[in-house]
Each structure stands twice: as C-alpha cells, then as structure tokens.
Image: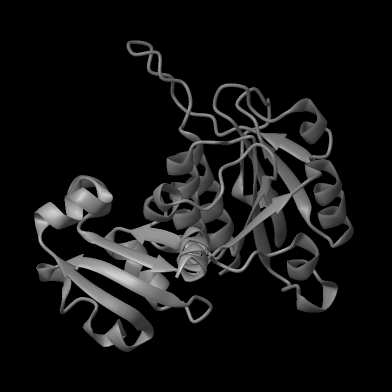
Length: 256
C-alpha cells in the first residue's frame, strides 16, 4: 500500500494544473495531452460535456469544496484540469531547414520574467501567426497555471522553447535566413512595416533593463516604436506585451 501511495504522489507531482475556462478548453482540445481529472462547479457541466470522454475522472464540487482544494474562484474560475505536461520542444527540432516556411516570425524574450506579460504575448502570437516563442533557460518562468491562464489557452498553440545560449540561437536563426530586429526604446530608427522581412525574429527585453548588450550585438536592426509622450503623467513607452502585439500585427498584415 505504501508503494502504491508513493507512485500516486509521484504521478500527481508530474501532472500540470490548468485553470480558467479558456485555458482548460484549449487544453482539452490538444491531442498531445492526457487528461487525468477535472474539478468543476456545477455550472460548467455542459461546457466540458463534449470533451468528457477524454477525461479520466470528472469531479463536480460546490463552491466551498473548490475553494478548499484550489483557492479563490477569482483565480481558478471554478474549473481546474489536471493533465500531462506539454511536450518540451527543442530549438533544433523546430528550426529544421526542411520544415521552415517561406514566411515566418519568431518572438524572442530576453529576461522577461512576468508570466502575465509572457501569457499576453503568447495570445498575440496565436492571433498573428507566430508559432514559436524563445526564452532563456535560466531566467524565465516555466509553464505554470498562472502563465497558462494568462495566455487564455494560447500556450497550447505556440511552441514554448527555452535555450541555454540565446546568442548562439540567434546566430543559428540568421543562418536559416531570418532577419533579427531588436525592439529598443532608445533606438533612433522608428519601427516601420516596410523594414520587416518575410522571415523575422522580434527581440524584446525587460521593461526595466531592455535587451542585454550581448543580444543587441546580434540584432541586424534596432528599432523603437515612437509615440507621443504624455507630459502630464510621464508615460513615454509601451508595455512589452503591447509592443509585441503591434509588431506582430504589422508582420501579419504585410505577409498575409
């Protein structure tokens, strides 16, 4: 009995919790996941009805039970799915010459650690045909319930790749014909849609420190999204997720 309990504990630790309606439904549609159990309030029975055959166990709870197990409904929205983790994608697996499209855009996040920003960026990626986001292995969050919920399910559609050497990865992308654009608020050149190549890499740094110098040196062009400055409230720059959405949209409308 003890042996079985340990096995169950190990299995439980390996599962990924997903919460929020959009994130859960997106995960249920992903054939690459296995779904072991779901915990829902009564009101979500119909919502998950057509996916129920893919779920190992369905648990219908009341508000008190849900809060006791998973905390406030404001966070989980009264729906929590326990699934196998997403398969880990490797850089070399995705960027193979024979697999590359003529038109492609990749987002690189240099030391951006806020899961809400990353989740929002992934939503923009899924909307504007960017299928890969690259982050440093040692200074970026893993796939967590918070990040998954912030992405509204986009985590199921966008490759989430972590690399040990960002500089080398950018060099490899150049060899594959990508043009590297660094979004830098201090750059003199204004971002223009005509600058974007069919195969583009968009690099964004943290809002406080920006792109690291070692990464800037690998960029073919440093550009800024120039805007009107609000002198009253001293607002002179965009949130990184907003900047990413603008640039991805520009690439999308130019080549689609």
